Image (cartoon, rainbow, N blue to C red; front, side, top):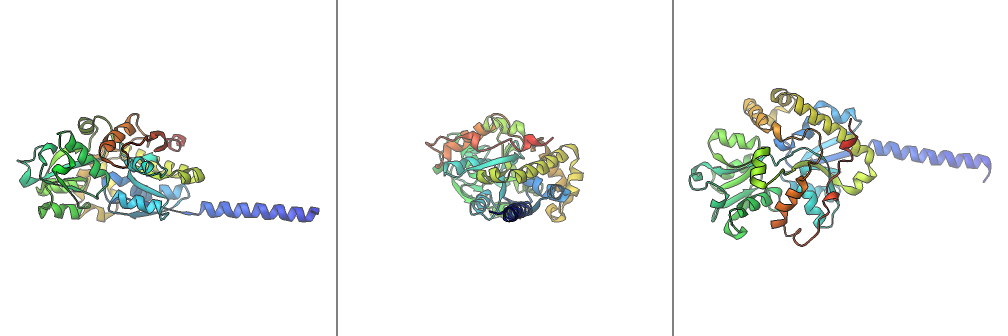
Length: 334
């Protein structure tokens, strides 16, 4: 090849690499959230409101689904690059041959409660009393399913001793209580505060605090997180690092600002017409958030213990927990 032709070829190669890099940098990142107005999933909308995604040069679109099961299906179908949902999906998906990992942890505990219908509270005083009753979950096969089953098993109950009904979250769950379609149901803030304030339900099991979670499950139960397909994390290290930085900044904001200031950054329709109640619910939830986005030691083992008893996908299979999460990207944040 002559010298001029060689130079042209080199220029063409450099140009194509440059264009590819630009296209890669401008790529939209779709994040599906398993219920975007739930306080357990507060960080993504807060990060957007604070402008942290834009600070990192990221084009992020947030979408919402009713449950984590729906969100993970969107991720596997390629309709999204990331999901904000419970970490335990990473374990479940590995058992199904899918490589998914959590890259930022938001919740040290589930941030949820098993609530009992107020008129049934005198008969149902713990999860051992749900025999012959109906347990409400967000979706069959969801995190709420396995947690409910595990809590009932600690009182010797089998899954055949009670029925489960998917009731979603928020208004649909509240309606299920009022229509007496469920006796006990798993839910999160601000729905728990709405149910308690209205008198429709009472707390049966508290998984909203570190103390309550340790007592009920025997350890921390890392829950809400940002998870992605491992191949995406490896081929998009720059983007993954920027997402981690935006979310760690968000977690630090939560740790250093009062509930009133955090609530002021959220859309008004998240308040459900009652901002004071939203702030109250947020105050009750602040202690569940991770301060740094890192997976706590022993946490994955607790999750595997709970899931291993009832998830048929996991039974009899060896799970490589080290492949279900990584601190690689949050460790890079100064």
